[in-house]
Amino acid sequence: MRANQNNHLIYIAIADDDKFQRFILNSLIRKDSRFKLLFDATDGQDFVGKLKLCTTLPDVCIIDLKMPNMGGIETTACIKKYNAMIKVIGYTSSDDFHDISLMKENGAEDVVAKSSVYSLLDYIMEAYMIT
Image (tube, rainbow, N blue to C red; front, top):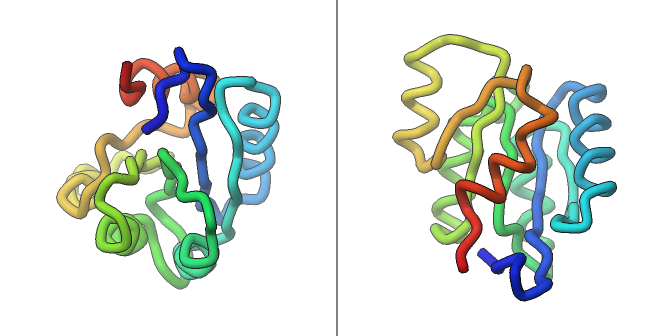
């Protein structure tokens, strides 16, 4: 990941089937000068397709746990197979410990609650910024 101390942006990509959640995340990322949104996707299949077309890879992917077509667990595994250096943060309103554990087993660095959307970007900076 790029260190923001050197005036480099942290590139983010999002997958969430909830249009309102995507809108909130898009708005927060676009207003924050530390980050650049590369793309958003409506589900895992959409996300993987867009990832394969990127000329710039994301540093961090925010991936919803529960999505149609391809959920967060499988999407995370695909991201990590594509490039293990990409950080994945699961993003969910679920408290299903089994699914959260599976997401981490498939490569997610962490899984955070959707209720903490406003602190998510600060969390990314604190947890994953390399100096």
